[in-house]
Length: 239
Image 1: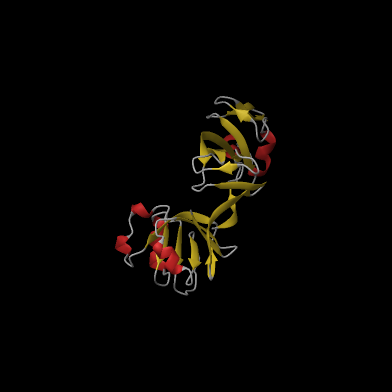
Image 2: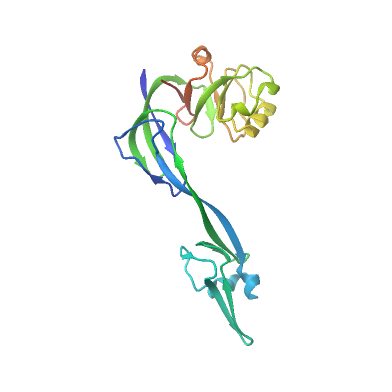
């Protein structure tokens, strides 16, 4: 078995819960991030001013936490003062002076981020966490997309054979990747596709790989977790 390092990307604002040189297991929390939804108020329309000048009427700063009913903007005219209050609890997140929208982020919940393999934290970077794992390393002839991982599943060369059970899987395809297969795989939230046939890769939200020399090993070990790293043109079959 060989050692393989890859950069596990994290969403912006994620709070890393591990340290460098720490060993991790699949059940460990790698990081957490907060999930928000956005509420928009057209401040320009509410105040009766232009979008360019609406921001001048804010009495709270971007990044401030507010409660429902708090005054967030005020505008004085000959007819008196007009106050705008927040209809929700949240954080004042952004103001768009092109359309006059004020964006308030409303906290939903904290999301735990796990990785489905054991390994060691090599480096914590701004864009993610570099992780060292053990596995059998194979070379790709070509690939595109982000780093991805999941259990492999042999594709039976029939679109009707693909079901919601393929969610999160990496498909092993013994023919060129075509648009119909990509469309259904994307709809089912498949993580990636590996083909043993040379093909021109087309734009897709999936991680795609072309492999011929290591195909027999992949097929024999169907169901194992693999990590696809198109940037390094490497695939790791994880123990």
